[in-house]
Length: 157
Length: 164
Image 1 (cartoon, rainbow over the protein chains, first blue to last red):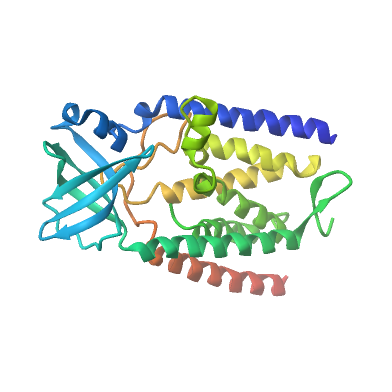
Image 2: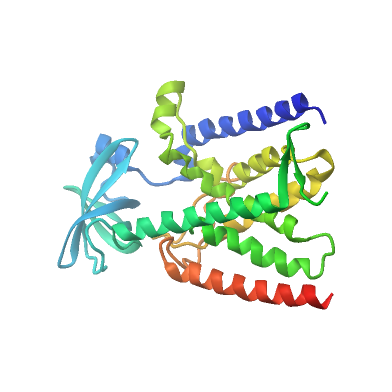
Protein backbone atom coordinates (compact mmCIF):
# COMPACT_ATOMS: atom_id res chain seq x y z
CA UNK A 1 0.00 0.00 0.00
CA UNK A 2 1.24 3.46 -0.84
CA UNK A 3 3.01 5.41 1.87
CA UNK A 4 0.64 8.34 1.48
CA UNK A 5 -2.44 6.21 2.18
CA UNK A 6 -0.81 4.71 5.26
CA UNK A 7 0.17 8.13 6.57
CA UNK A 8 -3.43 9.32 6.12
CA UNK A 9 -4.77 6.32 8.06
CA UNK A 10 -2.26 6.99 10.85
CA UNK A 11 -3.21 10.67 10.97
CA UNK A 12 -6.92 9.87 11.19
CA UNK A 13 -6.29 7.44 14.05
CA UNK A 14 -4.04 9.93 15.87
CA UNK A 15 -6.56 12.74 15.45
CA UNK A 16 -9.29 10.47 16.85
CA UNK A 17 -7.05 9.77 19.83
CA UNK A 18 -6.45 13.51 20.19
CA UNK A 19 -10.21 13.95 20.24
CA UNK A 20 -10.41 11.44 23.09
CA UNK A 21 -7.70 13.38 25.00
CA UNK A 22 -9.93 16.44 24.93
CA UNK A 23 -13.21 14.54 25.44
CA UNK A 24 -11.84 12.69 28.49
CA UNK A 25 -10.65 15.97 30.03
CA UNK A 26 -14.00 17.66 29.43
CA UNK A 27 -15.99 14.73 30.86
CA UNK A 28 -13.56 14.12 33.74
CA UNK A 29 -16.32 14.26 36.38
CA UNK A 30 -17.98 11.24 34.76
CA UNK A 31 -15.04 8.85 35.15
CA UNK A 32 -13.41 10.25 38.27
CA UNK A 33 -16.12 10.65 40.87
CA UNK A 34 -13.97 12.50 43.42
CA UNK A 35 -12.79 16.11 43.65
CA UNK A 36 -9.06 16.54 42.96
CA UNK A 37 -6.57 18.92 44.61
CA UNK A 38 -7.57 21.76 42.31
CA UNK A 39 -11.28 21.26 43.10
CA UNK A 40 -10.52 21.16 46.84
CA UNK A 41 -8.41 24.32 46.69
CA UNK A 42 -11.12 26.15 44.80
CA UNK A 43 -14.13 25.19 46.91
CA UNK A 44 -13.13 23.13 49.92
CA UNK A 45 -16.23 23.77 52.02
CA UNK A 46 -18.63 22.39 49.43
CA UNK A 47 -17.00 18.94 49.65
CA UNK A 48 -16.93 18.65 53.48
CA UNK A 49 -18.74 15.51 54.62
CA UNK A 50 -18.23 13.75 51.28
CA UNK A 51 -16.39 10.48 50.70
CA UNK A 52 -13.34 10.94 48.55
CA UNK A 53 -10.13 9.32 47.40
CA UNK A 54 -6.95 11.33 47.00
CA UNK A 55 -3.41 10.47 45.96
CA UNK A 56 -0.73 12.35 47.85
CA UNK A 57 2.93 12.49 48.80
CA UNK A 58 3.56 12.05 52.51
CA UNK A 59 5.27 15.09 54.03
CA UNK A 60 5.08 14.27 57.75
CA UNK A 61 4.08 11.31 59.88
CA UNK A 62 3.18 11.03 63.54
CA UNK A 63 1.25 8.64 65.78
CA UNK A 64 -2.00 7.72 64.00
CA UNK A 65 -1.70 10.69 61.63
CA UNK A 66 0.09 11.91 58.55
CA UNK A 67 0.22 14.95 56.37
CA UNK A 68 -0.01 14.55 52.63
CA UNK A 69 0.46 16.90 49.73
CA UNK A 70 -1.98 16.28 46.89
CA UNK A 71 -1.44 17.93 43.54
CA UNK A 72 -3.40 18.30 40.33
CA UNK A 73 -3.17 20.71 37.41
CA UNK A 74 -0.36 22.57 39.16
CA UNK A 75 -2.42 23.23 42.28
CA UNK A 76 -1.32 21.65 45.55
CA UNK A 77 -3.15 21.23 48.81
CA UNK A 78 -1.89 19.85 52.12
CA UNK A 79 -4.25 17.57 54.00
CA UNK A 80 -4.08 16.04 57.47
CA UNK A 81 -5.03 12.35 57.42
CA UNK A 82 -6.30 11.01 60.73
CA UNK A 83 -7.04 7.48 61.98
CA UNK A 84 -4.34 5.79 60.00
CA UNK A 85 -1.72 3.35 61.22
CA UNK A 86 -0.11 2.84 57.84
CA UNK A 87 3.68 2.53 57.83
CA UNK A 88 5.13 4.92 55.30
CA UNK A 89 8.10 7.30 55.19
CA UNK A 90 7.92 10.94 54.20
CA UNK A 91 8.40 11.06 50.42
CA UNK A 92 6.25 7.97 49.95
CA UNK A 93 3.00 8.10 47.98
CA UNK A 94 -0.36 7.02 49.39
CA UNK A 95 -3.98 6.69 48.33
CA UNK A 96 -6.40 7.80 50.98
CA UNK A 97 -10.10 6.92 50.96
CA UNK A 98 -12.19 8.57 53.63
CA UNK A 99 -14.44 11.43 54.64
CA UNK A 100 -13.51 15.06 54.14
CA UNK A 101 -13.68 17.05 57.39
CA UNK A 102 -13.38 20.80 57.95
CA UNK A 103 -9.90 22.33 58.35
CA UNK A 104 -8.17 20.36 55.58
CA UNK A 105 -8.55 17.00 57.27
CA UNK A 106 -9.56 13.54 56.04
CA UNK A 107 -10.76 10.84 58.39
CA UNK A 108 -9.23 7.83 56.69
CA UNK A 109 -11.24 4.71 56.09
CA UNK A 110 -8.54 3.04 54.06
CA UNK A 111 -4.99 4.09 53.28
CA UNK A 112 -2.93 2.24 50.67
CA UNK A 113 0.76 2.80 50.15
CA UNK A 114 1.59 3.19 46.46
CA UNK A 115 5.31 3.93 46.93
CA UNK A 116 6.66 3.37 50.44
CA UNK A 117 9.55 5.77 49.89
CA UNK A 118 11.28 7.75 47.17
CA UNK A 119 13.19 4.61 46.20
CA UNK A 120 10.05 2.83 45.09
CA UNK A 121 9.70 5.39 42.31
CA UNK A 122 13.29 4.79 41.13
CA UNK A 123 12.64 1.06 41.17
CA UNK A 124 9.56 1.48 38.99
CA UNK A 125 11.24 3.67 36.39
CA UNK A 126 14.44 1.62 36.46
CA UNK A 127 12.71 -1.68 35.68
CA UNK A 128 10.58 0.05 33.05
CA UNK A 129 13.70 1.40 31.33
CA UNK A 130 15.24 -2.09 31.31
CA UNK A 131 11.99 -3.41 29.85
CA UNK A 132 11.90 -0.78 27.09
CA UNK A 133 15.54 -1.34 26.12
CA UNK A 134 15.22 -5.14 26.13
CA UNK A 135 12.06 -4.97 24.06
CA UNK A 136 13.62 -2.79 21.36
CA UNK A 137 16.61 -5.14 21.07
CA UNK A 138 14.29 -8.12 20.79
CA UNK A 139 11.93 -6.45 18.31
CA UNK A 140 14.63 -5.45 15.86
CA UNK A 141 16.10 -8.93 16.01
CA UNK A 142 12.99 -10.23 14.25
CA UNK A 143 11.80 -7.15 12.32
CA UNK A 144 13.48 -4.45 10.26
CA UNK A 145 12.50 -1.24 8.52
CA UNK A 146 12.31 -1.55 4.76
CA UNK A 147 13.51 1.84 3.53
CA UNK A 148 11.95 1.45 0.06
CA UNK A 149 8.37 0.88 1.17
CA UNK A 150 8.75 2.38 4.70
CA UNK A 151 7.17 -0.67 6.31
CA UNK A 152 8.23 -3.03 9.06
CA UNK A 153 9.04 -6.43 7.58
CA UNK A 154 10.15 -9.73 9.06
CA UNK A 155 13.90 -10.31 8.82
CA UNK A 156 13.37 -13.88 7.61
CA UNK A 157 10.67 -12.87 5.11
CA UNK B 1 0.49 0.56 36.78
CA UNK B 2 2.80 -2.37 36.98
CA UNK B 3 6.25 -1.59 35.60
CA UNK B 4 6.81 -1.89 31.85
CA UNK B 5 8.98 -5.01 32.23
CA UNK B 6 6.14 -6.89 33.93
CA UNK B 7 3.70 -5.64 31.28
CA UNK B 8 5.96 -7.04 28.54
CA UNK B 9 6.49 -10.39 30.26
CA UNK B 10 2.78 -11.21 30.66
CA UNK B 11 1.98 -11.46 26.90
CA UNK B 12 5.36 -13.17 26.39
CA UNK B 13 4.25 -15.91 28.80
CA UNK B 14 0.72 -16.24 27.41
CA UNK B 15 1.66 -16.07 23.72
CA UNK B 16 4.65 -18.42 24.06
CA UNK B 17 2.41 -21.02 25.70
CA UNK B 18 -0.18 -20.44 22.94
CA UNK B 19 2.56 -20.86 20.30
CA UNK B 20 2.96 -24.52 21.31
CA UNK B 21 -0.51 -25.14 19.85
CA UNK B 22 -0.68 -22.50 17.11
CA UNK B 23 1.68 -23.16 14.22
CA UNK B 24 2.16 -19.63 12.82
CA UNK B 25 2.67 -18.02 16.23
CA UNK B 26 6.47 -18.02 16.24
CA UNK B 27 8.84 -15.77 18.19
CA UNK B 28 8.58 -12.77 15.89
CA UNK B 29 4.80 -12.72 16.43
CA UNK B 30 5.16 -13.14 20.18
CA UNK B 31 7.37 -10.03 20.13
CA UNK B 32 4.66 -8.08 18.27
CA UNK B 33 2.14 -9.01 20.98
CA UNK B 34 4.60 -7.88 23.66
CA UNK B 35 4.83 -4.49 21.94
CA UNK B 36 1.10 -3.98 22.41
CA UNK B 37 1.57 -4.37 26.16
CA UNK B 38 3.62 -1.17 26.19
CA UNK B 39 0.77 0.96 24.79
CA UNK B 40 -0.95 1.81 28.12
CA UNK B 41 2.46 2.83 29.54
CA UNK B 42 2.75 5.53 26.87
CA UNK B 43 0.56 7.59 29.22
CA UNK B 44 3.89 8.46 30.86
CA UNK B 45 4.58 10.78 27.94
CA UNK B 46 3.25 13.36 30.42
CA UNK B 47 6.70 13.31 32.05
CA UNK B 48 8.19 14.65 28.81
CA UNK B 49 5.33 16.86 27.62
CA UNK B 50 3.13 18.02 30.50
CA UNK B 51 -0.64 17.97 29.95
CA UNK B 52 -0.83 21.57 31.17
CA UNK B 53 1.58 22.71 28.46
CA UNK B 54 -0.60 21.09 25.78
CA UNK B 55 -3.71 22.50 27.43
CA UNK B 56 -2.28 26.03 27.42
CA UNK B 57 -1.20 25.63 23.79
CA UNK B 58 -4.54 24.28 22.53
CA UNK B 59 -6.74 26.32 24.84
CA UNK B 60 -8.96 23.31 25.66
CA UNK B 61 -8.90 20.77 28.54
CA UNK B 62 -6.53 17.90 27.83
CA UNK B 63 -5.54 14.60 29.45
CA UNK B 64 -3.45 11.64 28.33
CA UNK B 65 -5.66 9.32 30.36
CA UNK B 66 -7.29 7.66 27.26
CA UNK B 67 -3.91 6.09 26.34
CA UNK B 68 -4.37 3.72 29.30
CA UNK B 69 -7.86 2.70 28.22
CA UNK B 70 -9.47 0.32 25.75
CA UNK B 71 -10.09 3.15 23.28
CA UNK B 72 -6.45 4.26 23.36
CA UNK B 73 -5.20 0.69 22.95
CA UNK B 74 -7.41 0.09 19.90
CA UNK B 75 -6.43 3.36 18.20
CA UNK B 76 -2.69 3.01 18.86
CA UNK B 77 -2.82 -0.66 17.85
CA UNK B 78 -4.21 0.66 14.57
CA UNK B 79 -1.33 3.12 14.17
CA UNK B 80 1.23 0.37 14.89
CA UNK B 81 -0.52 -2.03 12.50
CA UNK B 82 -0.34 0.40 9.58
CA UNK B 83 3.45 0.59 10.04
CA UNK B 84 3.68 -3.07 8.93
CA UNK B 85 3.28 -4.56 5.44
CA UNK B 86 -0.35 -4.72 4.28
CA UNK B 87 -0.45 -8.55 4.28
CA UNK B 88 0.47 -8.62 8.00
CA UNK B 89 -2.19 -6.19 9.24
CA UNK B 90 -4.76 -8.64 10.57
CA UNK B 91 -2.27 -10.57 12.70
CA UNK B 92 -0.43 -7.48 13.89
CA UNK B 93 -3.64 -5.74 14.98
CA UNK B 94 -4.92 -8.82 16.79
CA UNK B 95 -1.66 -9.42 18.64
CA UNK B 96 -0.97 -5.79 19.53
CA UNK B 97 -4.53 -5.38 20.84
CA UNK B 98 -4.15 -8.59 22.83
CA UNK B 99 -0.92 -7.32 24.40
CA UNK B 100 -2.54 -4.00 25.28
CA UNK B 101 -5.50 -5.77 26.86
CA UNK B 102 -3.25 -7.89 29.10
CA UNK B 103 -1.68 -4.66 30.44
CA UNK B 104 -5.07 -3.06 31.04
CA UNK B 105 -6.30 -6.17 32.85
CA UNK B 106 -3.14 -6.38 34.95
CA UNK B 107 -3.42 -2.71 35.90
CA UNK B 108 -7.11 -3.22 36.63
CA UNK B 109 -6.13 -5.63 39.40
CA UNK B 110 -4.06 -3.03 41.24
CA UNK B 111 -4.89 -1.64 44.63
CA UNK B 112 -7.35 1.24 44.75
CA UNK B 113 -8.30 2.54 48.20
CA UNK B 114 -11.98 2.71 47.24
CA UNK B 115 -11.97 -0.79 45.68
CA UNK B 116 -12.60 0.34 42.11
CA UNK B 117 -10.06 0.43 39.27
CA UNK B 118 -9.75 3.35 36.87
CA UNK B 119 -12.29 3.67 34.04
CA UNK B 120 -10.09 1.62 31.68
CA UNK B 121 -12.99 0.65 29.41
CA UNK B 122 -13.28 4.32 28.35
CA UNK B 123 -14.68 5.60 25.96
CA UNK B 124 -17.08 2.64 25.75
CA UNK B 125 -18.17 3.19 29.34
CA UNK B 126 -17.17 5.45 32.25
CA UNK B 127 -17.81 2.58 34.65
CA UNK B 128 -14.95 1.78 37.03
CA UNK B 129 -14.69 -2.02 37.30
CA UNK B 130 -14.15 -3.45 40.80
CA UNK B 131 -10.52 -4.38 41.53
CA UNK B 132 -9.34 -7.38 43.53
CA UNK B 133 -6.57 -5.02 44.81
CA UNK B 134 -3.85 -7.63 44.35
CA UNK B 135 -0.76 -5.41 44.32
CA UNK B 136 0.63 -1.88 44.22
CA UNK B 137 2.73 -0.81 41.27
CA UNK B 138 6.02 -0.56 43.18
CA UNK B 139 5.63 -4.06 44.66
CA UNK B 140 8.67 -6.10 43.46
CA UNK B 141 6.77 -9.37 44.09
CA UNK B 142 4.82 -8.78 40.87
CA UNK B 143 8.00 -8.55 38.82
CA UNK B 144 9.60 -11.53 40.61
CA UNK B 145 6.56 -13.70 39.83
CA UNK B 146 6.53 -12.52 36.20
CA UNK B 147 10.28 -13.14 35.74
CA UNK B 148 10.07 -16.63 37.27
CA UNK B 149 7.07 -17.54 35.13
CA UNK B 150 8.70 -16.15 31.98
CA UNK B 151 11.93 -18.03 32.74
CA UNK B 152 10.05 -21.29 33.19
CA UNK B 153 8.15 -20.75 29.95
CA UNK B 154 11.38 -19.89 28.09
CA UNK B 155 13.02 -23.14 29.24
CA UNK B 156 9.96 -25.21 28.31
CA UNK B 157 9.76 -23.41 24.96
CA UNK B 158 13.35 -24.37 24.17
CA UNK B 159 12.62 -28.01 24.96
CA UNK B 160 9.47 -27.98 22.82
CA UNK B 161 11.47 -26.62 19.86
CA UNK B 162 14.22 -29.22 20.25
CA UNK B 163 11.63 -31.99 20.28
CA UNK B 164 10.00 -30.79 17.04
